[in-house]
Length: 257
Image 1: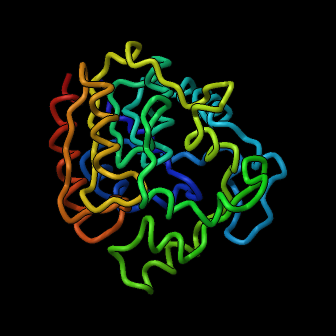
Image 2: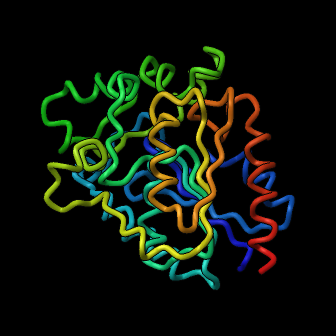
Protein backbone atom coordinates (compact mmCIF):
# COMPACT_ATOMS: atom_id res chain seq x y z
CA UNK A 1 0.00 0.00 0.00
CA UNK A 2 1.20 3.50 -0.81
CA UNK A 3 1.22 6.46 1.53
CA UNK A 4 -1.03 8.84 -0.36
CA UNK A 5 -4.18 9.90 1.50
CA UNK A 6 -6.99 11.32 -0.63
CA UNK A 7 -9.17 13.41 1.70
CA UNK A 8 -12.83 14.04 0.85
CA UNK A 9 -14.71 16.72 2.74
CA UNK A 10 -18.38 16.66 3.64
CA UNK A 11 -21.35 18.91 2.95
CA UNK A 12 -20.69 22.64 2.67
CA UNK A 13 -16.96 22.02 3.09
CA UNK A 14 -13.66 22.46 1.32
CA UNK A 15 -9.98 21.51 1.60
CA UNK A 16 -9.66 23.70 4.72
CA UNK A 17 -11.55 20.93 6.51
CA UNK A 18 -8.38 18.90 6.72
CA UNK A 19 -5.84 21.41 8.05
CA UNK A 20 -5.36 19.59 11.38
CA UNK A 21 -5.16 16.13 9.89
CA UNK A 22 -2.86 17.18 7.06
CA UNK A 23 -0.39 18.60 9.55
CA UNK A 24 -0.39 15.35 11.53
CA UNK A 25 -0.25 12.91 8.63
CA UNK A 26 2.25 14.85 6.56
CA UNK A 27 4.44 14.96 9.65
CA UNK A 28 4.41 11.16 9.54
CA UNK A 29 5.45 11.01 5.90
CA UNK A 30 2.06 10.68 4.21
CA UNK A 31 1.25 12.62 1.07
CA UNK A 32 -2.12 14.27 1.67
CA UNK A 33 -4.38 15.47 -1.12
CA UNK A 34 -7.37 17.44 0.14
CA UNK A 35 -9.77 17.58 -2.77
CA UNK A 36 -12.56 20.04 -3.54
CA UNK A 37 -15.92 18.56 -4.49
CA UNK A 38 -17.46 19.47 -7.82
CA UNK A 39 -18.82 23.06 -7.88
CA UNK A 40 -17.47 23.78 -4.38
CA UNK A 41 -14.59 25.93 -5.63
CA UNK A 42 -16.13 29.18 -4.42
CA UNK A 43 -15.50 31.61 -1.62
CA UNK A 44 -17.93 31.69 1.31
CA UNK A 45 -20.74 34.07 0.44
CA UNK A 46 -20.27 33.72 -3.31
CA UNK A 47 -23.21 32.82 -5.49
CA UNK A 48 -23.08 29.12 -6.33
CA UNK A 49 -22.67 27.59 -9.75
CA UNK A 50 -26.15 27.12 -11.21
CA UNK A 51 -25.40 23.42 -11.71
CA UNK A 52 -24.71 22.77 -8.03
CA UNK A 53 -28.32 22.40 -6.91
CA UNK A 54 -28.94 19.39 -9.13
CA UNK A 55 -25.47 17.83 -8.82
CA UNK A 56 -25.78 14.19 -7.88
CA UNK A 57 -23.62 12.11 -5.59
CA UNK A 58 -22.76 10.26 -8.78
CA UNK A 59 -21.49 13.49 -10.34
CA UNK A 60 -19.31 14.06 -7.29
CA UNK A 61 -18.01 10.49 -7.43
CA UNK A 62 -17.29 10.62 -11.17
CA UNK A 63 -15.24 13.81 -10.78
CA UNK A 64 -13.33 12.33 -7.84
CA UNK A 65 -12.65 9.14 -9.78
CA UNK A 66 -10.90 11.15 -12.50
CA UNK A 67 -8.67 12.79 -9.88
CA UNK A 68 -7.81 9.46 -8.29
CA UNK A 69 -7.01 7.76 -11.59
CA UNK A 70 -4.51 10.54 -12.33
CA UNK A 71 -2.50 9.66 -9.22
CA UNK A 72 0.60 7.50 -9.38
CA UNK A 73 -0.71 5.03 -6.81
CA UNK A 74 -4.01 3.81 -5.46
CA UNK A 75 -4.62 6.03 -2.42
CA UNK A 76 -5.99 5.61 1.04
CA UNK A 77 -9.43 7.21 0.87
CA UNK A 78 -10.36 9.30 3.91
CA UNK A 79 -13.83 10.81 3.97
CA UNK A 80 -15.83 12.72 6.55
CA UNK A 81 -19.65 12.78 6.67
CA UNK A 82 -20.94 12.91 3.07
CA UNK A 83 -17.30 12.54 2.07
CA UNK A 84 -17.39 9.23 3.91
CA UNK A 85 -20.26 8.05 1.73
CA UNK A 86 -18.38 9.15 -1.38
CA UNK A 87 -15.36 7.18 -0.13
CA UNK A 88 -17.57 4.08 0.13
CA UNK A 89 -18.81 4.60 -3.43
CA UNK A 90 -15.28 5.06 -4.76
CA UNK A 91 -13.94 2.05 -2.88
CA UNK A 92 -16.63 -0.06 -4.55
CA UNK A 93 -15.18 1.12 -7.86
CA UNK A 94 -11.83 -0.40 -6.86
CA UNK A 95 -10.12 2.94 -6.30
CA UNK A 96 -8.84 2.52 -2.72
CA UNK A 97 -5.94 0.72 -1.07
CA UNK A 98 -7.66 1.33 2.28
CA UNK A 99 -10.64 3.37 3.46
CA UNK A 100 -11.10 5.56 6.53
CA UNK A 101 -14.67 6.68 7.21
CA UNK A 102 -15.04 9.48 9.74
CA UNK A 103 -18.61 9.79 11.09
CA UNK A 104 -19.83 8.80 7.61
CA UNK A 105 -23.18 9.30 5.98
CA UNK A 106 -24.96 6.00 5.42
CA UNK A 107 -25.52 4.44 1.99
CA UNK A 108 -28.87 3.37 0.61
CA UNK A 109 -30.45 0.53 2.55
CA UNK A 110 -29.61 1.89 5.99
CA UNK A 111 -32.37 3.86 7.67
CA UNK A 112 -30.66 6.87 9.22
CA UNK A 113 -33.73 8.80 10.37
CA UNK A 114 -33.43 9.78 14.04
CA UNK A 115 -34.98 12.75 15.81
CA UNK A 116 -31.60 14.49 15.97
CA UNK A 117 -31.01 13.87 12.25
CA UNK A 118 -34.42 15.27 11.34
CA UNK A 119 -33.80 18.32 13.51
CA UNK A 120 -30.39 18.80 11.89
CA UNK A 121 -31.91 19.14 8.42
CA UNK A 122 -35.45 20.38 9.08
CA UNK A 123 -34.82 24.02 8.13
CA UNK A 124 -33.58 22.89 4.71
CA UNK A 125 -36.14 20.18 4.09
CA UNK A 126 -38.98 22.62 4.78
CA UNK A 127 -37.90 24.58 1.70
CA UNK A 128 -40.06 23.43 -1.20
CA UNK A 129 -37.94 22.13 -4.05
CA UNK A 130 -34.74 21.95 -1.99
CA UNK A 131 -33.80 18.85 -4.00
CA UNK A 132 -33.11 20.97 -7.06
CA UNK A 133 -31.54 24.01 -5.39
CA UNK A 134 -28.20 24.97 -3.88
CA UNK A 135 -28.67 24.84 -0.12
CA UNK A 136 -26.98 26.63 2.76
CA UNK A 137 -26.32 25.63 6.34
CA UNK A 138 -27.30 28.15 9.00
CA UNK A 139 -25.20 28.91 12.06
CA UNK A 140 -28.00 27.61 14.25
CA UNK A 141 -28.23 24.39 12.23
CA UNK A 142 -24.47 23.83 12.26
CA UNK A 143 -24.19 24.57 15.96
CA UNK A 144 -26.84 21.98 16.76
CA UNK A 145 -25.97 19.24 14.29
CA UNK A 146 -22.23 19.32 13.86
CA UNK A 147 -20.36 21.81 16.03
CA UNK A 148 -22.00 21.55 19.46
CA UNK A 149 -18.78 20.63 21.26
CA UNK A 150 -17.19 23.92 20.17
CA UNK A 151 -17.54 27.39 21.67
CA UNK A 152 -19.95 29.84 20.00
CA UNK A 153 -16.98 31.78 18.60
CA UNK A 154 -15.47 28.59 17.13
CA UNK A 155 -18.84 27.57 15.70
CA UNK A 156 -19.17 30.89 13.89
CA UNK A 157 -15.58 30.76 12.60
CA UNK A 158 -16.20 27.38 10.99
CA UNK A 159 -19.70 28.14 9.75
CA UNK A 160 -18.38 31.28 8.06
CA UNK A 161 -16.22 29.00 5.87
CA UNK A 162 -19.12 26.89 4.64
CA UNK A 163 -20.26 27.23 1.02
CA UNK A 164 -23.42 26.11 -0.76
CA UNK A 165 -24.25 22.42 -1.16
CA UNK A 166 -26.30 20.36 -3.59
CA UNK A 167 -29.92 19.87 -2.60
CA UNK A 168 -29.99 16.88 -4.92
CA UNK A 169 -27.17 15.17 -3.05
CA UNK A 170 -28.99 15.67 0.26
CA UNK A 171 -32.16 14.22 -1.26
CA UNK A 172 -30.27 11.16 -2.52
CA UNK A 173 -28.92 10.47 0.95
CA UNK A 174 -32.06 11.24 2.96
CA UNK A 175 -34.69 9.82 0.58
CA UNK A 176 -32.79 6.97 -1.05
CA UNK A 177 -35.95 4.86 -1.07
CA UNK A 178 -37.51 7.24 -3.61
CA UNK A 179 -34.39 7.92 -5.67
CA UNK A 180 -34.86 6.12 -8.97
CA UNK A 181 -31.12 6.29 -9.72
CA UNK A 182 -30.21 4.81 -6.31
CA UNK A 183 -27.25 7.19 -6.32
CA UNK A 184 -26.23 6.43 -2.73
CA UNK A 185 -26.14 2.66 -3.24
CA UNK A 186 -22.91 0.79 -2.53
CA UNK A 187 -22.25 -2.87 -3.31
CA UNK A 188 -20.28 -4.02 -0.28
CA UNK A 189 -19.14 -7.19 -2.07
CA UNK A 190 -16.98 -5.03 -4.34
CA UNK A 191 -14.91 -3.63 -1.46
CA UNK A 192 -12.01 -5.89 -0.49
CA UNK A 193 -9.54 -3.42 1.03
CA UNK A 194 -9.17 -2.67 4.77
CA UNK A 195 -11.70 -0.20 6.15
CA UNK A 196 -11.83 1.77 9.40
CA UNK A 197 -15.18 3.19 10.49
CA UNK A 198 -15.17 5.94 13.14
CA UNK A 199 -18.20 7.08 15.15
CA UNK A 200 -18.73 9.67 17.87
CA UNK A 201 -21.01 8.80 20.77
CA UNK A 202 -22.43 12.35 20.81
CA UNK A 203 -22.92 12.69 17.06
CA UNK A 204 -26.33 14.11 16.17
CA UNK A 205 -26.22 14.19 12.38
CA UNK A 206 -24.68 10.73 11.79
CA UNK A 207 -25.48 9.05 15.12
CA UNK A 208 -23.29 6.22 16.34
CA UNK A 209 -26.26 3.84 16.07
CA UNK A 210 -26.31 4.53 12.32
CA UNK A 211 -22.54 4.38 11.88
CA UNK A 212 -22.51 0.96 13.56
CA UNK A 213 -24.84 -0.23 10.79
CA UNK A 214 -22.43 1.17 8.20
CA UNK A 215 -19.61 -0.85 9.78
CA UNK A 216 -21.82 -3.94 9.87
CA UNK A 217 -22.50 -3.62 6.15
CA UNK A 218 -18.76 -3.91 5.52
CA UNK A 219 -18.03 -6.35 8.32
CA UNK A 220 -15.93 -8.55 6.02
CA UNK A 221 -13.26 -5.83 5.85
CA UNK A 222 -14.19 -3.21 8.45
CA UNK A 223 -12.89 -2.26 11.88
CA UNK A 224 -15.26 -0.16 13.99
CA UNK A 225 -14.17 2.37 16.59
CA UNK A 226 -16.49 4.60 18.63
CA UNK A 227 -15.11 7.57 20.53
CA UNK A 228 -16.81 8.68 23.72
CA UNK A 229 -17.23 12.42 24.24
CA UNK A 230 -16.93 13.05 20.51
CA UNK A 231 -19.54 14.35 18.10
CA UNK A 232 -19.61 14.82 14.33
CA UNK A 233 -16.77 17.31 13.86
CA UNK A 234 -13.97 14.85 14.53
CA UNK A 235 -11.68 16.85 12.23
CA UNK A 236 -11.47 19.77 14.64
CA UNK A 237 -13.44 19.51 17.86
CA UNK A 238 -11.73 19.17 21.26
CA UNK A 239 -9.81 15.91 21.36
CA UNK A 240 -9.51 15.54 17.60
CA UNK A 241 -5.91 14.45 18.19
CA UNK A 242 -7.20 11.28 19.88
CA UNK A 243 -8.91 10.37 16.63
CA UNK A 244 -5.95 11.23 14.38
CA UNK A 245 -3.58 9.29 16.65
CA UNK A 246 -5.83 6.24 16.42
CA UNK A 247 -5.93 6.57 12.63
CA UNK A 248 -2.14 6.68 12.50
CA UNK A 249 -1.88 3.51 14.56
CA UNK A 250 -4.42 1.74 12.40
CA UNK A 251 -2.82 2.87 9.14
CA UNK A 252 0.76 2.01 10.10
CA UNK A 253 0.57 -1.74 9.38
CA UNK A 254 -1.61 -1.08 6.34
CA UNK A 255 0.87 1.38 4.82
CA UNK A 256 3.73 -1.04 5.49
CA UNK A 257 2.22 -3.72 3.23
